[in-house]
Length: 281
Length: 124
Image (cartoon, rainbow over the protein chains, first blue to last red):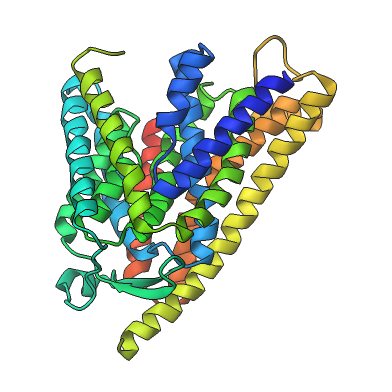
């Protein structure tokens, strides 16, 4: 038993570190390991993934709040869209064929990976500080953060708010209906659409995905999908990993984080497309 | 940066400190329960429940806690962890209110309201 406990702790450590750096839930790491390597029922894999999302979110948020990297107003504002999306998604289950949605959302992630690649090729990270966006001013969304890698305070502007809200609504539908992509679509909205710098985007995504997951997590908790012998060592590993990852992330150059995103988003997107077309389970 | 922005930044910092403190307490409490349960399980090699079963109702978990059952402690820790993001939204309402940011009190209340609806739908 102690072997399994240690193994889940180490998996959690890895998933938590990567999850905190990228602002993703860690489901891409947890689900395949738990189902393929341990041969567990998908029901328990989903339960473990949702705990992973919450542990990554809460664990990293503590450091990101302390160091003032995330944007609390942007998170709160956009959470209106994700939480409504999650409810709509839950209602659409059984009405819309999920395979169709898998293909669409998968294609969006592949596109998002391509966008990340283009931004990386374009060279230096661009920060849109001087101009003002009316909606961003009204909702006090513009902010600044201290970049530990560049060793300077960076003021940034938030743009394209209606587009951001729309993608966040879609992200909510995806997690409510399919139980996936809690972080990937949020980073896409914040970075691609709303032009936030990558680090606050990833930190804010981390904060938001916990809230999106909390409602469905209670359902899984009470229906017995969350096995304590798996979830506890996993969560403890993730909390430690997230504490480490949230510090590493601030020291990394944004280019490197972007570089990690490209294959991860591409993999996630292709996986979803194949799933939607029925090629993989 | 003009003075309005500075005020916003200072206000944000105070709000973030309040929320950060509460979240740290929540995560720490969850961790303590999970660790206690895990240690109990490893030391006694007894989950406290027959076979592979584990408690999934609040009543069963609470009664398991009084009997020092390992899985009851572990499930309590998980449950507390699940509640931390929800707690974060609740505390945010208070923090924005304390900083007299009415707009964000309403925005956060809206999120809280939608969350509660989704809890209710989920358990229907």
